[in-house]
Image (cartoon, rainbow, N blue to C red; front, side, top):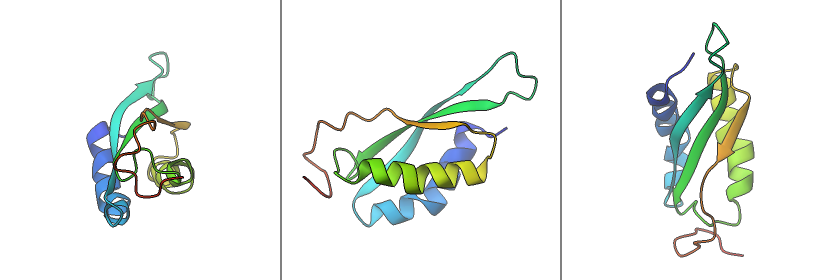
Length: 97
């Protein structure tokens, strides 16, 4: 079972360095666990994309191909990575449609 802090540290060390080249960053918002599961299996990880990632036309692909893969490799018990970002604000987006 991973904590928010452990997941954020992994993202900072592995993903945010890459996203930082585009002025972006991913932050862990919260984890949802099933209280009936004795192992406290993490079902959902909620993340927020900020900076150049917020509103970026490539954010969906970055989330699915980079962020989610790193998170699930780090903790295979995680089922879903859910983006909570309001991507309607494209003012800082690295790539605009």
